[in-house]
Image 1 (tube, rainbow, N blue to C red):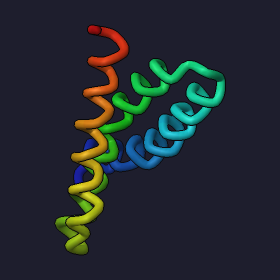
Image 2 (tube, one colour):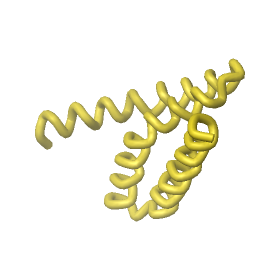
Image 3 (cartoon, one colour):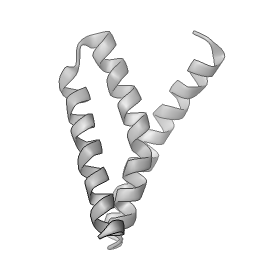
Length: 83
């Protein structure tokens, strides 16, 4: 495994819980629009991780769910910031 890939894997393993918990904190503090923004920032890491899980262990459900959640979050962003 090359160094850049290892660094990205480490970044992903830190970003997923930090950004996901950050999302929940923003929502709990009654800032749902910023919760959506933080969650959208976390989605590339979720997509990467779920893709790896699909390729290594056939976890298609995780990948499909992550794609669907990304779409829903994107629609929420459009709803809050562009309507």
